[in-house]
Image (tube, rainbow, N blue to C red; front, side, top):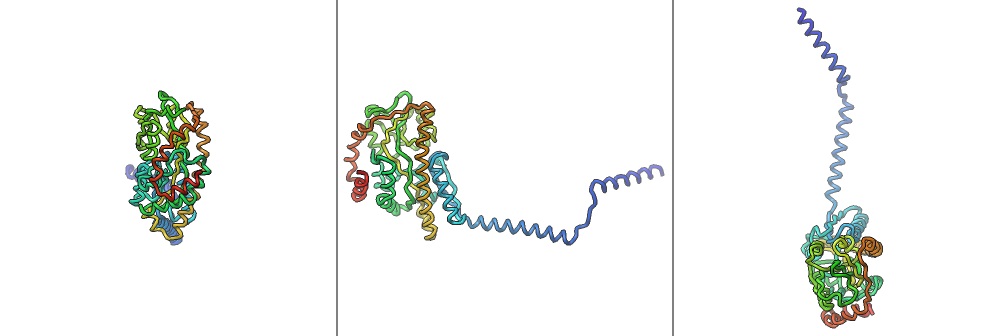
Length: 359
């Protein structure tokens, strides 16, 4: 009997403890149930709305081959922002940098195939697709950025872009990659006169005019994908490379090359280009938005290139790069055979427009 009383007492204590810990449990009212149902419905409605909105957004791929700090990236970001704003968010443009989708030639082929929608890249490799673009690669062609802008934004640029239609690419706008300079290894030394180029193993783009120019100057041009350049300089496979200052700085070429010679030997135009397959799917209003946004983004990209060039040249000096400023007159004179070699190679009408504009 005593044991039974103890057991009952313990059970009573446990029940009291459970009630104290759990608090008062009120039965759910109909109002509570209605409120819960309303909240669940709102969550589901919001999710459905978001899913529908996401389904209506069209995603496009934009690609370039250099570092994410380069103005190519900044220009494409500006383009993506403008397009999104002007289409009320209908188009979302994902940007792939550092040759994630391939080098410039790969990107141009991707535009033709429709695997890349938009790209920003230099005119150099375009000469293998449309030969007339090679005229822009003649050495010492433009004496200033202002002259280059006027020519490329004018009749010549428009006529060159029209030639892209036949290969499934749409020209958006000309922008800028800057004037190209030569870097060399510490062992080779700076380029201060034409004779310093003799035997120099220099990386160039796969560009006929560039390679012929360096051969004419006595160098040994070696075309190579840019993704392989840093290692080739580091291991001594190459003595030299040539690029605009923002490429040299943003890709840390100063870590493997100690000399920078300001030769301005080529001006390097760049372009915002669209896949013809993508572009033809856009309605007329959206096509106009894309073209307008390309021009605005190109102007912004040019500003960034020229700003970076000034700032980064000073930073390269601070990084103990040896900066040489050779007299360019002998280099220009040595390049005259290139003009003779190619004067009848390209469209005669376009050549006249170009030479009249650059006199």
